[in-house]
Every structure is written in C-alpha cells, then in structure tokens.
Image 1 (cartoon, helix red, strand yellow):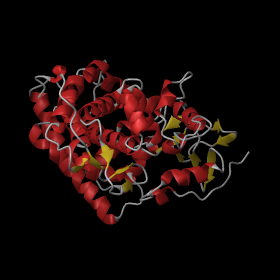
Image 2: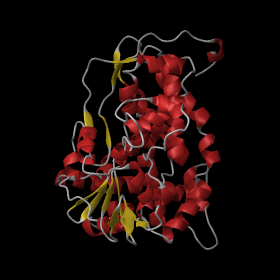
Image 3: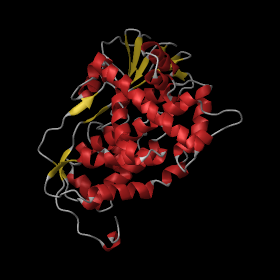
Image 4: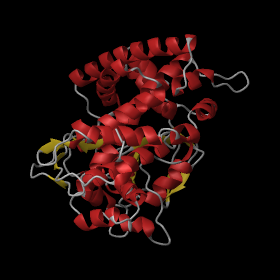
Amino acid sequence: MNAPQVHFELGALKGEADPYAVYARAREDGPVQRSGDSWLVFGHVEAAQLLRSSSTRTGFMAQGFRSRLPEGAAREEMSNRINFIDPPRHTQVRKLVGMAFTPRRTRRLEPFIRDVARQLLAPLAGDEPVDLIRSYAHEVPSLVISELLGVPVEDRDRLTALADRVSKLLGTGNTEAELADAISGAEVMHATFRSLIEDRRNEPQDDLLSALLEAEEGDQRLTESELLSLAATLYSAGHRTTRDLFTNGLTALLKEPEIIASLQDGSLPTEAVVEEFLRFETPTHMVARILEEPLELGGYEVPAGRPIAVMLAAANRDPRVYPDGDRFDPWRWTRTPEPAAPLSFALGAHFCLGASLARLEASTMLKALLDEFPEIRLSDASLKWHHTGVFRGVDELPVVLGPRAEPRDSDAGLP
C-alpha cells in the first residue's frame, strides 16, 4: 500500500506555540505518512519499531553537515557526532564511550547534584517572583555536566552559552545570521575543549574526559575528532536537554496542586513525575533516520535510502499507547501494566547516553525544590516557548516560591 501523501512541513514547527495541536491534526492521517520523498512517523509503536530496527542509519546526517558546512569546528563536530555515525564504527565508539561513561560514574554524582541544588535554592526569596530557569534549572545541569567532564569553573558559563549557540545547527530553518553565529560558537567551543583535552592527556584526572582518553579495546581508541565532538555533544545535551526536560515538565506540574500534594506525602514517586515530564513535554521533538533495507511499517513498505522524520513528541502522546495522552497524569507510571516507555531519549543503537543521568538530575532537582518551597506556584506572567523545529523549551519560568519550609533536624549542617 502507498502511505498517505501529506503536506506536513518540519520547518513550520519552528516557533510554533502549540506543536501538539499540529501533531494531533497530522495524526488523523495515520501513524506513518509521506511528504514528498520523505517519510514521517507519528505513532509510538511504529516509531519504536523503526528506531530498534538494525536497518536504520544516521550517517546521512553527518554527510549532509559535511557538504553544507564550511571547513572548521562546526563541520568537524557534526560529522563526528556519535548519533550520526553508522556501524561498524558506531558500535566501536559506543563501546569505548561505555567503558568511560559507566553507571557507577553516574551514581557517584548524586550527592553532588543534591548539594548543588540546595546551595542554589538557599539564597532565593520566598515572596518575590523569580525566573527558575536562570536561578536554578539552568545552573544545576550546567554544573553537573561540567563536574562530570572535568571542565574548570572559570570555563563553565562560557561553554554553556556557546553550547546554546552551537545547538542551532541541529534546528530547522536557520537564518544566515543564526548559522554564522553557530559556526563561530563552535570554533571557540572546540578550541576550549582541545586545550582541556591536551591538559588531561598530560595530567589525567578523575573525570570523564580523562576516562575517554584512556578507553581502548584492542587497537581501537577514540580519534581526536571523535573526542572533540563527544565533549561538545555531551556538554550541550547534558545541560540543555536536562534543563528543558525539567522546566517543560514544571509548566504542567505547577498547575496541579493535588499531584504536588501526592509527591509531598510520598504517595506518588518522584520518578513517576519525571517520566511524565519526559512524555508530556518532550524536549527533543524529532530525530531523523534512513533505512538500509526496506521495512514494513504501519502497513506500508518504507523504502531504503529515504529520509524519515521520527516525531518523538507526537509518539509520546499517541492515544493508542497513552489513553488521554493530552492530560498530564504521572499516576499512569504507577499502574499495572505500566505503559510503554516514552521515546524522549530515542531507542535502539542510538539510545541517549545520558538518559540515566538526566532522570537522576531531574528527580533530585524536583525533590529539593518541593522540599524547600512546598507552596511554589507559577506566576501570573505568560510563558514564552521556543521551538527550533527539533528542540522545544520555555525561555523563562517565572514562579512565586512561597514561604520556605520549616527546617528539619535532618537538614542541620547542610550547605
């Protein structure tokens, strides 16, 4: 069968205030669709099948950036990104990274995340509106990924700002000015990481960069280009995606006092709320794939070699998998059987390296915030969202924190 031909334009999502309404209308034409020579996947089951398929490839993305970008750091980063590499090299790189970026290294960060969260909340006033992104949600992930990689304190703010600039390369419909800004930002960012990698090569530390330098399997090691791209990718995703996961989710949670009360009395696990954050307000809305071999998907044969946009955010509200999917309902993750996991971190060979760290950070940040300010609420200011066509988040999150919780005996001596 031929899939329905639609006129859904990915570029039209850029700046869209309510992309979920757009996805709902598009889903009416089916979970798998064609748009010109490209394919679109809106259904959860179909997206999961595609992402898990051993036939999926992402190397065409690297080739595209290699042909479009001028010689330099931006082209080097995008053409060596771990999520844009195909087998067999992807398998080798993923194994090398796994030797360094271990579950144990992630778990070791939990006390650091908790202490940083409480330190950042300590000076905040309870009766004045604050932008929670600037004062908290942006800062925690930035400090955590810096600690993980071993980025010096004096470089953290600058690299965070540079990562936001470079991330525009992954969006759609960039202006010439946005593209030029991203390219120049990549040059500065790579120069900083190149110097840091050289320092670690000469004097290894107990950090992820040093571990990546030391990772080897037989005669396989990460190349200089792969190291630079990994460092930039991890730094960017490690703060931006986690920040947006947390703040996007809070825009829904802070409208639900009954859910907050259930969190505070322990009847609703924090992890269930974070899972609903991921599903309901997905930070990364789509990923791109092609197939090496044709694949039957949703009753249609998707041919090899054609671009496929996998609409993660649309799949995460697929009513066939998530009944009442347009309702924020963390309780769905406590029921038996539990629903299929959201696709916010993709699936398969390119499942996000930092998924467990992002979940840990968001859970720790949420618990610290509600412990300190149990009456927090959204301010009356309207929210302004940005959508690059790929990534979505709020520009500011104005909240009224309310009174600070009464100190507990167990809090004595905390920084």
